[in-house]
Length: 434
Image (cartoon, rainbow, N blue to C red; front, side, top):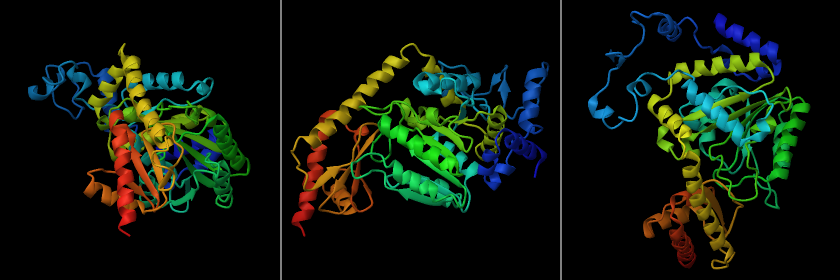
């Protein structure tokens, strides 16, 4: 093992030995080189005032070399903020601005000890970092049965973890915290679990209420007290899109400092919060009472980034930073929020109107995010999906035998009734053809 990796591991052990036990073999061996090209280049940038022959870019007249056909489209920005490599952990100003935003939007973080957000190539990359650092064959990844399919690729296929699901909803259609607890306590023999908490949930668009949130925290605390080491990951991809009476904060704030056996991790980003999906700007943030643990996890995260993508895209980090600083940012974001809320409310109004009855479908609770899910009673979801796309030009997502996901996020409010009319008509077609 490299001496730097060994030192980071010792720092983690000293700060919280449970966190060391959570690391995968890769997580223990990874480190960020302090004597490599990047560190030598950084030293030269700080001290080599005559010539700096270390950086692996081309320069011209003191600026990164660039093509006019590109710069003329980006003339609002200086070439130095576009073309050079961003630091592996992200632009320092952006990291500081995102942390400030995170604290403002999550009052429960007040007084909590957590690290500086580290920039990722959006949320999938952040989740992949979590998988690399903490998951390997034999480890359990605990998440609800209504989930984003990429979790299986990221944690199961890539890292060989055991994917353990529990029902998302109780019979009363509330979050199933007892199911979460049961799945966690089943890991007492192995002593470790990775928990994925995705709110607003993809695919259902559900965010728990305050009491449900407290029950989730209580379940994780109980499992930790029973001796299970828990990497509690808040996948906050759709954070902020809370349309009704639900949690308005990430559970990261409640999980931070909860118990020595709980490592809280927040994965979020501008991707969906700021409507910049193609910019691929996300963040990963760790919480720990130990500054040594936070520093070591940042170094290991930078090592994963260095070993995979080297660093994230500089232009999009600049664009996001510029937006966060803009005077009209909050007002423009609120305007888009109101559009999204209007669409969600319209869907609920249609489904509750009695127009379609309850014989062909019911719907899972939704109050946030981009999506909602119908539970079909008379036809198969995949059969309906194929019929709708080929006969009505309507695309939907089939999940399992009964669930049909509809993204109201990409449908104008005035078109939503026509959309559900078509889904209903498609069901009736299939019923009659039997």
